[in-house]
Amino acid sequence: ALRRKEPLNLNPNVTARASIYTSRPRTDRQRAERRGKAPRTMTRPTMESGASSPLLLGLVLLSLFSVGTVSAQQKFGINYGQIANNLPDPTQVASLLRSMNVNRVKLYDADPKVLTAFANTGVEFIISVGNENLQTMATSPGAARQWVAQHVQPFIPATRITGIIVGNEVLGNNDTAMAASLVPAMQAVYDALAALGLSGRVTVSSAHSVNVLASSFPPSSGAFQEGVAQYVRPLLDFHSKTGSPFLINAYPFFAYKGSPASVSLPYVLFQPNAGVRDGGLVYDNMLYAQIDAVYAAMKAMGHTDIGVRVSETGWPSKGDEDEVGATAQNAAAYNGNLMQRIAMGQGTPLKPSVPIDVFVFALFNENMKPGPASERNYGLFYPNGSPVYAINAGTAGSGDGGGSSVGRFDPYSSQSMFSAASRLVAVRRRLSSLTLLLVLPVLSALLAC
Image (cartoon, rainbow, N blue to C red):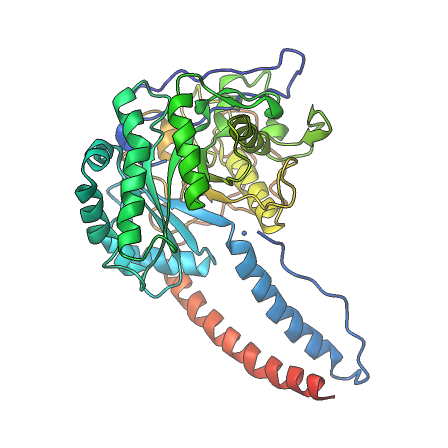
């Protein structure tokens, strides 16, 4: 598959702080593939019964940490791609994700085996309508009703389907027929959901490359390409009317790969750097600048009422010789530092009170993807369930500007995690029950005092 040439949008006055906002170009099938608050803390309580206070404090902190973890999960999700012939059974994947406390998953289709395997797990799913279906749905609302009846209705409420992505990176590909079909197809899917009483629980959106932006540096100058503006305007009206988010696929990796001499590696890996100033705002990483450029572009078209969600972002752990920066060390730094910011509930400089909402790409390495080696090496896990590299959020600090696949990085052992995941889920359930049994009587006694 030939990759689209990635446009460079550099500020010539800024060295090593470039604004190259690209996402991953891909074939039609590839296009179908590609936590918000920190754990809560509390001050040490003052208690008259000093003998029991350490135990009580530990139990209360444990219960609060559990609550904080659940809250952090709400803004973190993972892309579950399946272009491979060696992936584990979906039931094993369900155990793995539950052991990781991941409760949001995005699919590139609506695989019934996956949706069935995750029934009654509480994991939220975003499913997808392929680009090949758009024109049919746009001209035949019955096709949208049939799709929803087949891929959504049978699985709700056991499986928590909370969103449908209609088309992937449709705009900006010079396919005017498909671009013109996008909003009508989205409306048809929304109407089909509404007819079943599901439009209040399942959002409808579409995922876009950041290349739909004609201008992205500085972020405040964000603007959509002139060629897609006629399609974006009704799209934004749809989002405003239905309350659904604008989705972007954003990959700072491609900025570094395309111009490693000009783009600061710490800037793209969320590591300490001087940052980029835009008026009174300072951006210390490229992803946040990309997000705010989209906000600015929507504002320029009269909309400040639509949220931005990152439907894809990630970093490959391996690549071809000419894919500079595709290393396990950089992948660990990018994903680890990003996860730490998600867990902190951090917002962008333009929207500091709105926690970033991100789906990381991807769950597994996928061995059947066409294109350069990096395409097959975005996974956090190998298909056997072992981690591709260690992620220590907040400590995955040092990046690797070279082309080695591992370098100084010391990955996890290759021991499979699936059996351990099942045991861990069971242990967590028992610990949660024990925590409640121990904490509730103590809290009741305190309230009675």
